[in-house]
Every structure is written in structure tokens, then in C-alpha cells.
Amino acid sequence: MYMTVIFSIAIMVYSIWLMFQASEYYRTGDTGNFYFALIAGIIGLFLAGSSITRLRRSVSYVSSLMKQVSTVVVCDKCGFKVVRAFKVGDYVNKPEEKCKQCGENMYVSSIYAEEPKKKG
Ligand SMILES: [Zn+2]
Image (tube, rainbow, N blue to C red; front, side):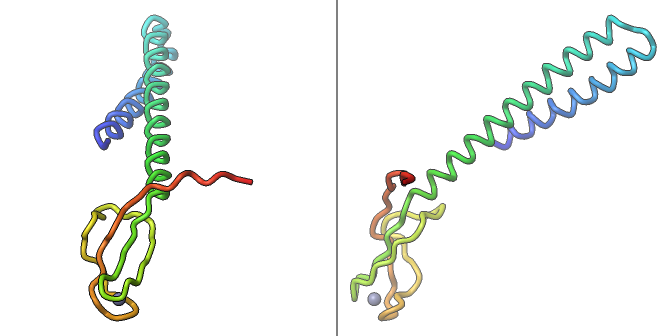
């Protein structure tokens, strides 16, 4: 994940540098290098842009999945139950904070995914 981000940024920086080089080549009348740098720069920017867009999409997909996952926390003693959004690190039988009703330790009883809510 981080490697993809670093790689995309590196390509983007390199592409921008290539574009500057291209304008420099254009000024000096070196059209061969100008076209090469320009095309390479455009391709690089396109690649970096598309991989960043893909990454953003997958991140928002993962976070939307996370919102749909719920964690059920119960108290063994009095049966008090709390349903909250899933947090990274949650697992079944994980000890949770103390029960609001009786002060006993609560634990995660189940983790489940909800169906995506439909509008209308
Ligand atoms: Zn309790």
C-alpha cells in the first residue's frame, strides 16, 4: 500500500521534471528530445494519476466496508449489550471496557457485516 503511494508520487515528480525538461528542450530547439520528454512526462502523469485514483477508490471501498461491520459487545453478568462500529483490532472474546450497568468487564461476543443500506 505505502509502496504504491511512494511509487506513484515518484513517477509524478519525475513526470513533472520531464515536462520542465521538455520546455527546456523546446526553448533550445531540440525537438527530438522535446517530444520524447513531453510524451514520457504525459505517460508518467497518466500512470501516476490512474494508480492514485485506483488507490483512493480502494481505500474508500475498504472504509465503506468497515462502516458496515458491527461489533457486538456484551456483559456476561447482566446481559447488557452494545452494538458499535467495528474497529481495527476487534476480535471475538476481546475484553472491552467495563459494563455501564454493573461494572463487570464486557467482551466482544460477535462481529458481523451488515447489508449495505439502500436509499429510499
Ligand atoms: Zn453488566
